Amino acid sequence: MYDYQKKFTTNRLILKVIDESYAEKVVEYINKNKDFLTPWSPLVNEEFFAVQFQAQKLNEDIKKMNDGSMLKVWIFKKEDEKEEIIGSISLNNIVRGVFQSCHLGYQLSHKEINQGYITEAINRVIEYAFDELQLHRIEANIMPRNGASLKVVEKLGFESEGLAKKYLKINGKWEDHIHMVILNEKME
View (cartoon, helix red, strand yellow):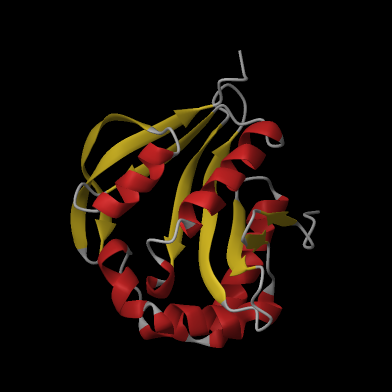
């Protein structure tokens, strides 16, 4: 079973696994950032914005964490007593065996961009993925027009392995993605 009390800290942030008791806070975060995140996200229907749907999604995430195929943490500022969610990071499609790899996904509130929060948070998740989960590689697929996101992963040491044409359907359109990768140099 996954440790639901799992928390990671950085200088300014708390990254933690949350359960369905946070569904209202997730919906609040999604609604506040709907316009900002839509150009970078798959299409969703109105059900996505319901507390019940998000509670179910949080439970599904915990099941995936229990089976070892995912890690998802939500980002909070240390000094925020209201515990407002400012973003999330996920390691999806964790594959073991000879691959030892995963896909990185992340998002941040429009109010919090350009303050280094997402770089700080992803750096901590990478440390955990490499040191504790013993993953060999983390892959991030980013649309070429998302310069801010590319800048974040480049700062963290990700390198381009090329362009994947019409890789993911984002906001209703098949989009090219730059395949960015970081390797765990501690693993032989």
